[in-house]
Length: 187
Image (cartoon, helix red, strand yellow):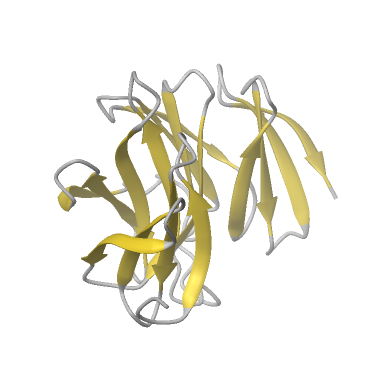
């Protein structure tokens, strides 16, 4: 049992932990997969939306990137310290219309990290955009319009193409991760 209804469940890169996020409970719960017991919990200031894990050099988890309810940005959790260490808002996109209707309290909803661990991608329903940040330093690398209300992003196994599902356009946009250029829009 965990505190609050679960939004999603994830497995850490090393497969040792199952991690759940709760919107109403505002809680990240880390479960030891071998013993099926709670290893640790982290209360957050808002409901937990998508999360993704940064892999350490030894294959373990170094950080969790978290999208939160009603927050247009990313929270950063240090795995070893078991606490939030930073949070940053994603910037407005000049020329893009700011969408505020139909967000379901999730202005950002979707993450991916390239297999080489060098690029974090995060989608924004507010600006119809996918943001790219270098890892580990989280420096902005660019943005690309991916359609209205992007909900999820997934990568090809080699990480060269990101596919972003846009619920508002009923489409999928394929983006080359090296250049952040749209290579296809699929109805």
